[in-house]
Amino acid sequence: MQKNKALGNAVILFSGLFFAGIFVFYAFFYNSHLHFEEQFQLHLMTWDWLLTRLSLPGGFAGYLGSFLTQFYFVSLAGPVVIVLLLATLTIVVKKIFSKVNSTAALFPFTFIPALLSAMILCNEFYPLSAITSFLIAMTGAMTYVSVTRRDRRAIAGSVLIPVTYWLAGGAFISLVLIMIVYELILRMRSSGTRSVTGDIPGLKPISFWYFVVYVVLGLAVPLVVRQYLVMQPLMITFLSEFYYKVRTTIPTAVIVLFILPPVIMLILYTVRVKENRVTLAAAAAILVFAAIGFLGFRNFANFSAEEIMRYDYLVRSRRWDDAVKYAERNPPRNFLSLSMLNLSLAKSGQMGSRMFSFPQRGDNGLFIPFNKEYVAPMMGNEILYNLGFVNAAQEYVFESMETIPDMGKSARALQRLAETNLINGEYRVAGKYIDLLGKTIFYRKWARNARNYLNNEDKIDKDPDWGEKRKFAITEDYFFSIKNIEASLAMMVKAHPDNKTAFEYLMAFYLINKDLRNVLYLVPVMEKMNYREVPVAYQEALMYVLGLNSNDPMKNAPPYISQATKERMQAYAGIYTSYQDAETRLKKNFSGTYWYYLHFGKLVRSDDSEKK
Image (cartoon, rainbow, N blue to C red; front, side, top):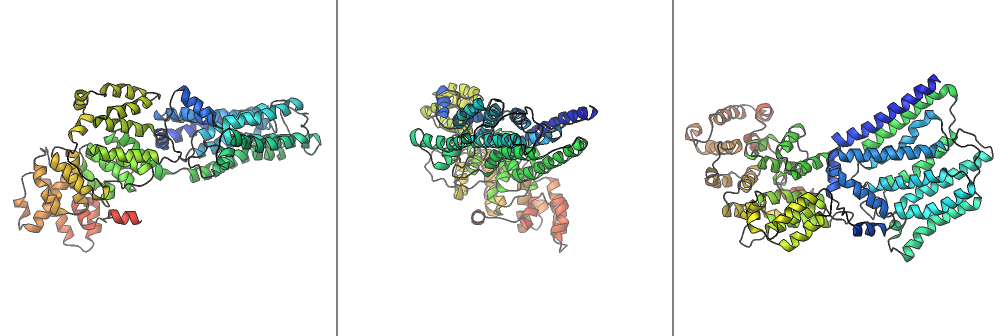
């Protein structure tokens, strides 16, 4: 009795730790992946949208998955949704497995399907609908094993296979396998091959011919649907399109998920736990579970991608200061993250002062090259939009949406397209995007407000964001190319000297490329910017040029060069000219200066990075 109570407490503790761990992981360590998933889908709350989904095999599960994915928009709502789904899945799987072996010591096995589901969601190519589909199939399996009379069970199985196929798509494979394995176990029990603890002893297996019926139905139903209802490639016919975003790829992890429950059922059938080995069996099961979890999350979780997505989320949310603070703890390790940091520095007024406090390696850290995929253009559009290149931003975001792997639409992309068309006065086009967003849950409020700007020139002109972008529009015809961004920036600064962000980006472009001649060319523009204090990087660059062209740079320095900058340059020059290992000596106190970057920074050209 005491042992059963202790085991019951262990189950409660294990359950609490497991689900709390999943919540903490997705809420605090992997939350940006959820925001990433949400922004690259569009779920419309309309009957037409629902009926469109229900007309496809697996469409109900796909609709349910995308509906729940909407809640990823709220940072803590996403992890709650995932935990509730996994908890429901665990309860359902427990009821299935208990029909085979109800030994309490083996309870960790009932959590393994939920564990694999949690790991799968770490990969952004596996949508939440992969889990909702699997849950529907497991619910069908639970229904099947709960029917005690074999004739009714045979009828139930014949009905569940086509129904589950239509509702959940490819997960019906798991249902068919569970039904066959369950009947095999019952057959072995009835023949006395093996006897284990189950919830309902003495059940009789169905006739052998029903095995054939189940297999035939599993093969025939998808083929009949393909022949007469929905013409699809053979792989998608059996699997459906809601499990993996690259439809030409067989999702290995999902196939493993389908096979896992019947395999565990066979394992549970063969395992017998003696009463004096209950504690040892429970400990062994927990160790197996922990090993699977450690190796699985290590394989599926991609924290490098999470870092990029975190920067992107902060920029998308215009949390510029938070992005800079994040960079102080997690310095950018690639050009995508660095470009988002540099934009945040510019928008928070810190670009000229702190840019070289972070690793700069070339102008790809300022501008993202246009690639024919969906992530980089979406991030790159943020830079172009904030610089005032509205049409270029529109091109980037449109191409991003058209290259989404599952060929869906993006709520974030539609929002930006609505903005660019409002700025350009294309109200009819903007209205179409706004109407679509108005049919969503979390973008409805934004759409309702944006609708007030349609055909209202004065209201747009007074808007602090859209009015500014309209003001900075370049009216002359010109050819925009990210490979020749310098010319576009120079044109923007010439046409709108008050576009401070564009000016600082042009200065950053020259500083990063060590082009001091053009830095000097921009000094007159800088002097008209009314800086309360000229950014430190600009001061350091000008002091370096003065040092090359003046016998007494300290005396001939402009008044906006601070005394601290002069003293810092003297200290830097003293070490740089006196020691052969100057780079090492200077790194500790001067690695954040422009001089250190000028002398020791590795410059990666745009063309070089493209070749790599």
